[in-house]
Amino acid sequence: MFDLDRWQEIFQTLSKNKLRTALSGFTIAFAILLFTLLFGVGNGLKHTFEKQFAGDATNSVYVRSGRTTKPYKGLQSGRKIQYRNDDMKFINEKFEDKIQFFSPNIQRNMQVIYKSEQNRYNVRGVYPDYQPLESTVIQDGRFLTYLDVERKSKVVAIGRLVEKDLFGNKYALGKNINIEGISYKVVGVFSDPGGDNDERFIYAPFTTFQGMYKPNDELDYMGFTFNPELSVDQAISFTNTLTKLLKEKHSVEPRDQGAIRIQNYAEGTKNVEQFMGVLNIIILFIGIGTLIAGIIGISNIMVFIVKERTKEIGIRKALGATPKSIVGMIMLESIFVTAISGYVGLLLGVFALKSLGDSLEDYFILNPSVETYVVVGATIVLIIAGTVAGYIPAKRASSIKPIVALNDE
Image 1 (tube, rainbow, N blue to C red):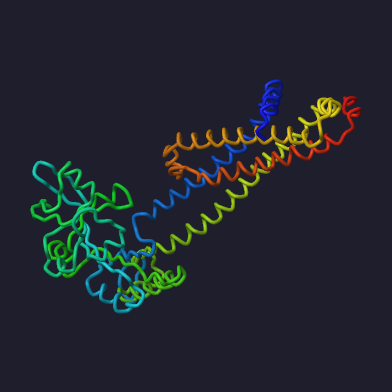
Image 2: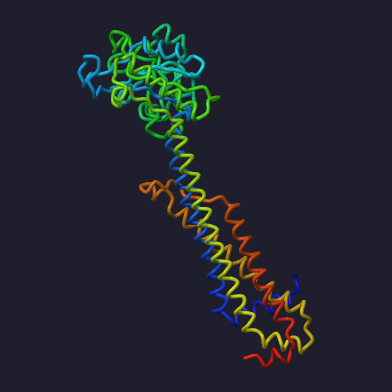
């Protein structure tokens, strides 16, 4: 393996047959490059779907309302459905064993001022249970508490980018901000995996907001997470039942799809998982096809190489070379070319994916990348294939009698 004379002989052979070596290397490098790009794009699609669900708990449900599209029980179509506090009570009493966290929501786009800095942000009045719904992570201070809700406190938790916009490099914790003429104390700063938009929200106690902006116990919508022990199908069945009961409560025609709108992330997660399963199968199938094409290419080239060197092999045997040494030389050359070319293809593929970066985001491909072990594994497969492809014709050629090999045309 580490015989210096043998390696010098291999390099001499490669240098004398540049075209042959280049064709062999190109076949292997291209197979690994294509394999890397294929899996990178597939992972980019996965990252896109993961990002869509990153800002919310995967078991979250949002209950929103619209206008009726059909007349029902003497009521005209076009009627606006308005949720109130009794709807919260109704849902929690009916489905107490199926709900994990629950929060109503009132949202307003409002002018927020701190000293000379000001901007408009979406301000939400929520319960403390809203934190796990949005998967927010507290960086400084705390989130809202039920004591804040009970006391109708004028406190807020602000997003990381709100702090950056209004306070620059200073800390917002403990400072007061002005939200359309009313002073609120900042008790917490949070980050959100959903990205920049979700980090420009401000959260205030629900009761504080409802008392100011929603007469008659009105609210905008409700959010909750279902019991994580429920399967996806059970969660979907649960929300279907909830939709039916809310339609009955608000006198909505059963086939009316516009009045009661329930978004169940479990259903979206199930659809994404099914899609990703099909995508993985397609990528795996194409990837295997790519490797097979590379293996066939290597095999054909090695057969050609051995055939081309038949006379050389005859001379070596006439000079006393053993079949073992001839087979070892050809196999070592095959492994060397395959390994180097595979590594070059790997580097080119990784470089291409890094160069693309997020430029394909418009095509729903975010951060295309590939796990190292996948590409290294594919390279090893090609090296093994190259070894086998070199061994079979080399073994056959080494068994030919010298006089036959020397007379080969």
